[in-house]
Every structure is written in structure tokens, then in C-alpha cells.
Length: 256
Image (cartoon, rainbow, N blue to C red):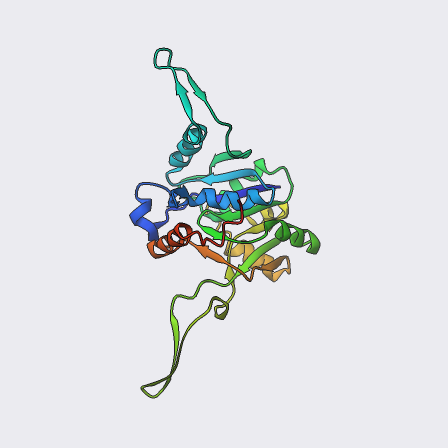
């Protein structure tokens, strides 16, 4: 099953990093978060990737064009200019880098990939969120219910403590847990090809009319992921993920 990763947005809330690179290429532990996401899927046997490019897409193309050399020992003959790689590539992946327009919205980027998907179910996620989600079980769940779409529902990490008052007196103070938060869209979708019937053009926002309509028609199911999930929206998020990685406590690192 093919995996689509939406990697074309501006990432304006991470402008400290995204002024020079696209958001999916912001690094956690020296590795672009895009690669973290791909390794989650690869761990469960899904390694046919379609990366929907837009803003600074050339940066992502350059990364993968030079990927083999970056991750290998090299023997360079300075006289002839020949280069020999001394190691095999670390991943047996197929990575398709597709330009889906500078200003396309999420549904528009997906629509531009229609011709590559050969009328079969596929997975889709955003290029800025990680989780310790079992995507194999996600696919099995999707196949079991027969609806057009499945969205992974997650509970975001709580950012603030909860305080209760009696007048001006604090009567209760506790740190909120992730399980206290409501369910939200966590990405990690699975769709049948009928989703394309709900996409119109580059301006289509997947999360608006298409998914709202699927929900009204009873064609959208939720796969509730009760464990770790985190998006990288802000510099604070980036630093939190970086700290978890450096301390070897990254919950999303399901691979060895």
C-alpha cells in the first residue's frame, strides 16, 4: 500500500527554521522529521512513499538525490572524478517526489497525486507529526469496516495545568494529562479511491468539505490511538521532541 506524505506547506509557526528549509526537513536528532515519519511506516512494512512537494520542494529533492552518498563511506578518485559507495543504502524504499504546487491546499495536493495511485487504497499523513501508532493495525481496521476513510484520532499532549477556584482561593491544582484532552485529527489516514470524488481543485482543503461530507454520509471512521502522538507546530514542540530523542526516550521510535 502506498504512503502519501503531505510536505508542501509553509510552516509559518516554525519560521525560525522554515525560512531556509521546508518544515518536514526540520531535524530531530540530526534527522529530518520526514525521515522519522517514514521510518514509522517502514517498520510495519510500508515503504512505497509519495511525498507531495510544494514550498522549498527542491530542498527535499536535493536531500534524497544525495541520500546514498550522505549515508555511505565514499572512495573518490580525484583524477577521474569517479565515486564509489562503500556501503549499501540503509533503506530499501521507493521515494517518489511529486511537485503538487506552491499554493495547493491539502486536498489539492492529494488530488494531484490521483494518477499515481492506480485506483487502490492508500495511506496519507502530514509531514510534521510522529506517533507510536501501529499502522499495520490501522490498515487492518480500515479494511474491516468498508468505509471510504479512516482518520487516526489522538489526544494531544496537555500544555497547561488545571486550576479550580473558590472565589480567589485555589482549591485544586494539578497537571493535566494527555488523556484529559479531547480527541483531534492526528493524521495517519487510510482512504479508498472514492475520496477523489470529494476533491475539486488545488484550493480544496481536505479537512473541510471532503472530510465533513464523509462524516455526514457515515463514510468516515476513527481509529483511536490512545498512546503517544505529537505534532511539530512550534519551536517549543521541536525542542521537546529534540530533548526526548537526545535522552533516548522518543516514544515514536518504534524501529531498531
